[in-house]
Image (cartoon, rainbow, N blue to C red):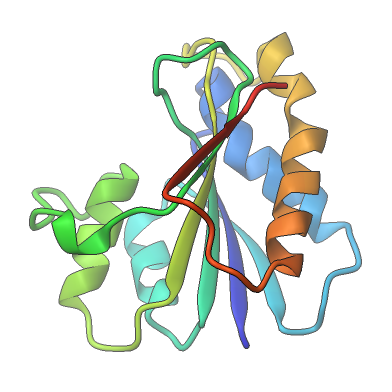
Length: 160
C-alpha cells in the first residue's frame, strides 16, 4: 500500500504555511517504507499529477478555514464525486486540485485532509501562536491515521 503525505500551502502567507511545516516535521521522522512525504507548497498541478501516479492513499495537510477556533485540527474525507470541474487548475485550492485530478488518467487514491483552522493568512513567514501549537498534535494525528486501517467518519474535529 503506497501512501503519499502532501504538505500544501504558501509559507509567505502566515498560517497558510501550516501544511508545509507539518510535512517538514514528518519528513524528519522514521515512517514506513511505503510512505512518501513531500512539500508541494503552491504547486497544485504537480500535486494532482502525483496523486494519480499509483498511490493507494493520500493524506493532504493544509490550512483549512472552517470558522472554528484558530489551531483547531480537522480530519476531512472529501467527496471527490461532488466536485465541479476545476475553473483554475493552477490554483492551490484543494477543491481545484482534486477536480483537476479527476480529469487525469490513473488510479485515484483514498484522500484524507488534515486541516488546521488558521488565525490569519497575511504576508509574513511565521505561523501564528495557535497554529504553531497545533503542529505537533497534527504530526501525531497523521501518524495515527497511518496506523489505522478503518475508514474515518466524514468529518472529525479536534481542538488543540
